[in-house]
Image (tube, rainbow, N blue to C red; front, top):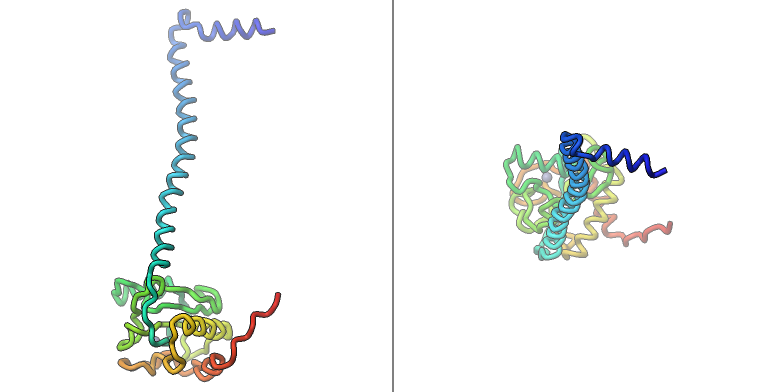
Length: 220
Ligand SMILES: [Zn+2]
């Protein structure tokens, strides 16, 4: 049974009879070794890639953890004055049109279901880095800027935007000790003339909701 195979192998590998066979065997070896090397290298490069990414992520986390909370005294409320938007689109606008090297001027953006979720709270880099904002002329160094997506001269915030806004303000007040009287509309802040956040912004409702005790989370 094994004899014919033995014979075949001997015949195939007898380089004295077929001098070109040595070349074929070497070529086959190179192909096999190359394939093994390729598979290994792919695995290794994936691990190297993962390793390169890991310190970056950890550095970001460490940076946020290590950043001391800045001393904030005010919370200033804005509308975007645009029907659509999110952190990324306003960041691009502030970098490219306004030429602000630190990008997005607000600390938080609350979506209206266009470019981000309805009521979704997005956190800007200036908050992550605890840097001053660029949203209200004279108070920038001490005011947290929250922008609700929408033009509230024409429309009104969605119920989910208001709900998220109240939750976010509550959280910020607790963490940064901002008194209720220092929660301002952009047009009430000194140093600028603006309609922001628009005539349909329900500030009285927001203040009422903030004054009411926080509702416990419904049991699920
Ligand atoms: Zn504004």
